[in-house]
Length: 103
Image 1 (cartoon, rainbow, N blue to C red):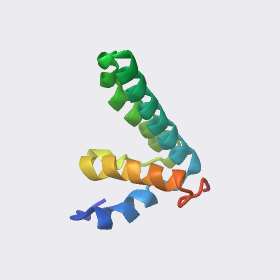
Image 2: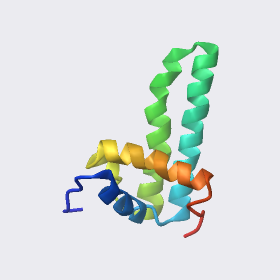
Image 3: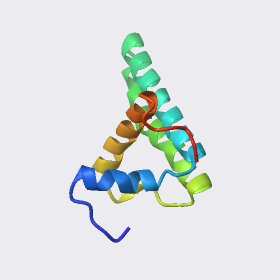
């Protein structure tokens, strides 16, 4: 990852190339769903301390996918904002059936 991406549009294809394994993507999607559910539960129950778990839940599943299945270093470490944004774009594209759950 020697190239420095200056725009999200340039970064996103690289991001997708780092998520070729469907199991890794699946762990990303699972983590994203848990983040949404945890945020809703936190607000509904007024248990705002649960919000501190959001990064652990969201990134935890994603990083396991990278280390176990992709065997690569998560883009979060080099591009934290673009990577965070790309996680949600990838999830939205999956939900809208733009990205398929395949290897």
